[in-house]
Amino acid sequence: MAQMARRTRQKVAAAAAVALLLGGGAIAAVSATGQNNGARAGARATVARAHARDLATAASYLGVSSDQLAQELRSGKTLAELAAATPGKSRAAMVAALVAAAQRAPAAGSARLDAERLARREKRVQRRVTRLVQRRFAAAGHP
Image (tube, rainbow, N blue to C red; front, top):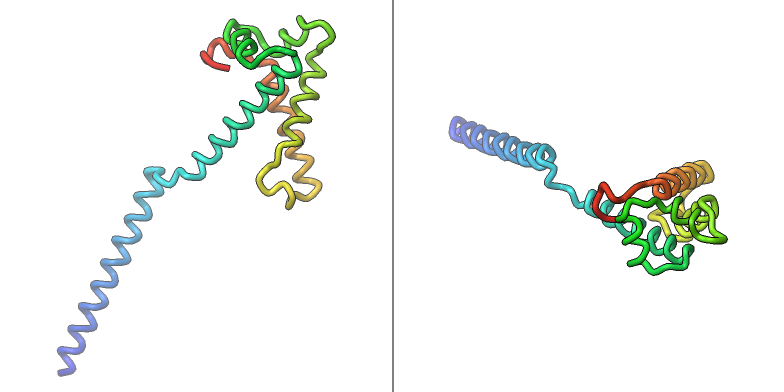
């Protein structure tokens, strides 16, 4: 009787070990293949919204339609060049308008940011917008 109980316990322990191994293997496989990319998809959507907002803000600042702006950018011009070529507009003022629009847009968790993190976020926005204004979109094929 004791030997039967011991065999049963051994079988249960072996089954549990196999289950743990299979579960761990499945988690490792998902991690290795990157199938848990929901966070990345969310980040890409956030970047796409910011890009669309930036281009709409730039078009509004320049007094042109978004389609006209996209056509100019595809032709190889930068936002800085377009601002300089528009009477009464400047690269610096365009950067300021784009930064202001980005800061008005609600950021995830921005209400919980302390002063230091908020300052870092503002620097990142400034760098991103400055790069955007200087970027040539013709090579990428889309603005």
